[in-house]
Amino acid sequence: MALTFDEDSAPTPPSLFAPRHRRLFIGRRGIVASAASSVVLLAVIFVIFWYAPGGPTVRYFFFNPHLMWQAFVGDPRKGLLSVGRGLVTNLWMFTLSEVLVLIFGLLIASVRLSQSPVLFPFRVLATMYTDVFRGVPVLLVMYMVGFGLPELSLGFLSNQSPAVYGCAVLTISYSAYVAEVYRAGVLSVPHGQLLAARSLGLTHTATMRRVILPQAVRTVIPPLLNDFVSLQKDTALVSVLGAIEATRAAQIYGDTVFNFSGYTVAAVLFLLITIPMTRFTDHLIARDRSRRLAGT
Amino acid sequence: MNDVVLELTGVVKRFDENEVLRGVSITLHRHEVVCLIGASGSGKSTLLRCANLLETIDAGTISFLGQSLQDPRIDADLVRHHIGMVFQSFNLFPHLSVLDNVLIGPVHSLKRRRTEAREEALALLDRIGLRERANDYPDRLSGGQQQRVAIARSLAMRPSLLLLDEVTSALDPTLVGEVLDLLTDLAHQGTTMLIATHEMNFARDVANQVVYLDSGVLVEQGSPEEIFDNPQHQSTRNFLQRVR
Image: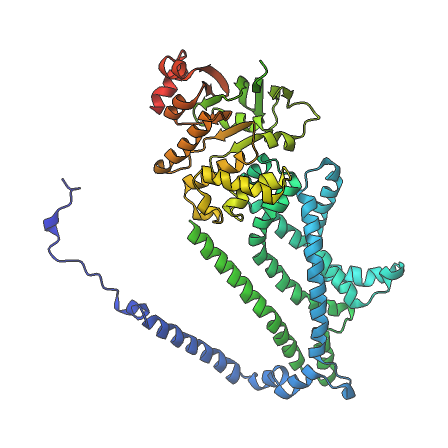
């Protein structure tokens, strides 16, 4: 009796209006609300930096437009290196490293995913490799390779430039990460795909090439690009070996004129490279997500 | 008798401690259809997977066209050229068009020329009524259409034996019919098939032999009439009672 629905007991319809303080976010007014909150937030940040007790000092030491420009273009007569030209070194270092990482990482991943008994010792080595280089900070590998290899006096291995050692270290470290990204991509392909391919008589290699890898690539690209953004920043670590790249040029500039504006320039330049990449990665992730949602 | 296609003798399969097949023996002749029935987990799928070497067996023998598959000189990939398999979840390759799904076996396993294999693949798609969908991707097809393509993909290898693993279990009830119709056609055309199924009416219609498995034990086998109308064992009777 008490559980039956009684039509007569609801004489007045319930109120379906949103409470007053939430009506702001309904419909078009949502855009106004988000614009207003953005303006307020920016204003607060600006006021804090501009009117802070040390504000003028920070602006002089970090954001001095004249010195920033000087740091960017350099001045050979005063022995000032160009941060902009230093960035060219970062550019070719990460381009070279990324190509090598793609190849070397795939090699490591295929060894780890192989099944042949002959490759057993290589599988163990590949596993140790990924464990070790994902665990050791890049900076330490940088010191060991950059200062250790030249000491060995091993012909051409020991007389390379710091930038070349830097590329080698970045390749060694990041290949370990990228190998795991590849491997996770392959393992993310449903097992039924493997069964279907093998039951059609495709060999292990043909299955990988025709069925698994084409599907793995789609899941692998976003995390791969993430690692690349990280690698691009880490080219700054090559400065500890003495390679004149953007960070190092900014450091030299700062030590000479006693102003940090060069660092700001370097930071902005790094952002100019990495932001398009991160935006592109997010775009790919969003596209893949909407595709998957549409698929179900 | 030289027309034995598949012969399982005392097949045992264990996953760790768990014995999934406990000495199963089945003989399958050319142009014959054998239906495996039994509850989920009774070992039907495992038996099919053992038959095309997706799983290795722990005891017993499986011979295919008179050759023991346990012979160490056997190349599993070559065996699978002659044994087709269709799965419950279709497992079409989502990155390939319908036509390329059908072509992948002939072209990349049998190494046939794409141009000549293509004609035959299109004829197969015609036969399953999906020729106009040749260039579509699998996600554009209904479940029933996908499963028909998966069957065509196996047939493109011109197998001597087709293994079907509960191929209608993942389908909407409205789509089951079109797939069973195709299988009935294949049976009438003399395709040799080993079919794990929960569709009892279908089994009764097309099977030459019905095999009832319970917890990895072959309890009973015989003609559809024998199994469905006059089961000898209590467990068979119980099972049939429950599925009706």
